[in-house]
Length: 266
Image (tube, rainbow, N blue to C red):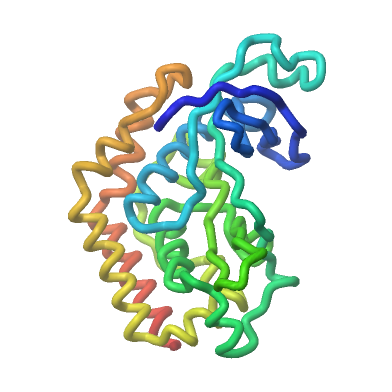
């Protein structure tokens, strides 16, 4: 992943992980997270891994870069920024709209056809269960869609800090068979509508394609799981636990079983 120097800080988003809105030396806008406050280096590693591996598996995730800034450059305006030198930045999709359960609906086939990549939501749902994302549900989609053109909009997945079980599992991550799909994005009204219009055969084909790609790209995925900037000091032990978690055959079989069972409703 390339590194980009930060030219200016525009604002900070008042959320748990406090992403900063910054301008990079490429004159693009990024939502950038640093290891400050409740966000630590492991969170940045999770974002890095999920972007790298998720893109390989066909998920639409905004382009990302490692974001560098010079110490004390922005301390006066944003003093908390002075405690970290390297962040993870997601490039802004312009224009975009945040998707939410109470504001976005698919009421008919016309609404469905206005989405250019509905199958991507299925991959996102599978990925979330596979990578144990604890922060995408009816309460928080963590999805955006492109807007402002006559063409169908595109869905993008954002914010993967809470993958691998999030904070609760940072010291105890280990593979366990899944006995349901949980509060998955595919259970929301938005997700079930997309599932309904795709139908069982397409849903099953997407599931098979996801794991076929996962197995085919094993070497590349292992490489990405074991990559991280030395600045973050991620331990080999954590990298090994993450690798063991995502490749556990028993757990992956259970994910396929639970997804197949859910797809029979469509």
